[in-house]
Length: 297
Image (tube, rainbow, N blue to C red):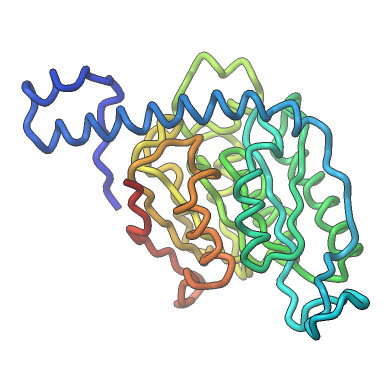
């Protein structure tokens, strides 16, 4: 798949409308709108951030009211869906998933948990091992054999490492990633002082590990990537491209990196992915498919 890299310079509008062809003027307007949305989301998230610092309280398997209309003993639904584990990105916390969590709960996901990992985490493999312990604890507590994971940015890369390199495909049914640098990103080279940022660079040891063979991997991958994601360089780095992995790459147009876990259109796409509507047919060892899935006005 080829994606045209667009300029990140935000030309004043309507000046750009007078100077550029209509197609480029429209693109510049889309960039401006996405940038404004990113700023608004960042401001709101900074207000919510303190509420997500503490790890959330763990609860037993979710119960629902009796279907006979009484308020008698609550019971598990007849067909329970796997728990959903939400994993945030770099220097973030579970507060980023407030809206997505509500959306999943309102549409039948009775057990949704957000996991925090320390902003001082310096190694993706170590974080993936910790994720594995959390998932085992969730499975023991809920009685579920598998979970689904939604990972934003670095969170998706940690989850992929667990699935692909630590045997997590036995526990993870579906892994949905949002703006995750699957093949590494070159953005913000000054951030290389942090070890985990260096691991997210193209050609790092971690990225090379994830490009190595993974025969028989059972997890279904669905990667949502945005054509206006300012943290992905190149943009295609947010796509899963591996011959052994069963994967779908879903293009999102009109929003940036921070909006991916928050926008209602993306939330609807995530629900479809978790319900298997984006399942790719396995051909031979594996397959990777690309689709233009979401356009956000």
